[in-house]
Image (cartoon, rainbow, N blue to C red):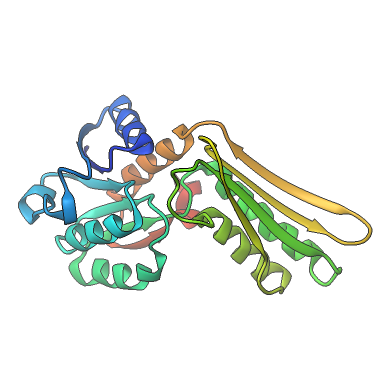
Length: 229
């Protein structure tokens, strides 16, 4: 499979490495080579089976506009752009492209999201207060993280509560630490996920690309398909 990786940051580089390890042909474009998505012309994009984006929110939207308009199949691991999600889904549908997005491409994080739903449902109406703390490296652009926002949404829907508070901490080179806490006057329940490396994100993104090229055009959320990989 021919994969185009957009973004040559730490995660983007690892995505390229993992894709090559899995036997794929890989081409990487960094921000300078692809300013304002100028490199993503229809003939160029047509040379790839899948595009994987790990850039920045504004760049990701520009990249999606350029790639999805050609009917490309995209996996977007960048977060912080979801205000444009409906627009990007619509573009993919109109042009016969595929958009597979996710707040986190780690399979174990997806398991945490499912556990958060179960936790919220089990404690519904029992007087518990929920809070989330997330810690990431100082260069992460969006705060709170997309994963923390997803956790909050899961708990709110399952427990029937509003506005689960999220504390975002940026320090050092922390890969990702998410803590969901439920407490009342009697006790406390804590659910924690800690990433030691970006490799889990990279492997999930490459496997997602392998999956999406086999599917009909459309829009997919990684949380709905990760068990199929």
